[in-house]
Length: 118
Image (cartoon, rainbow, N blue to C red):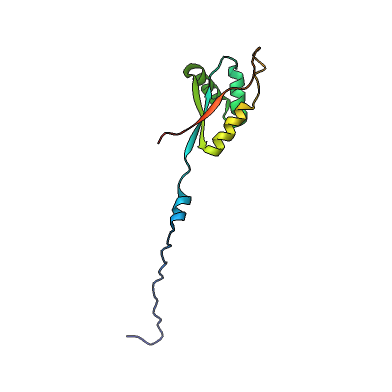
């Protein structure tokens, strides 16, 4: 029985948001790129460690492990990121300068970027 004072409560329905094709494109993850640092005989471990801590914020321990990998494997991936950021980091490596600890060092180390295989 109703006394006439009760109100009917309707459930709240939240409409579904329609997505547009361009919304889906904006949500796609950008392709990833690796920054690869290549071995040479003109740069010391100390130089590599200092460069990696300065440019990438790697702790010295990780810098040492990467320097060792570069020395033994000929190369190492030092960062995986977006293409634009990878290009910036590659250019910073190329601009870092010569190793003052090694006589005869003629310039910076060599780095490249490669897309991450999917």
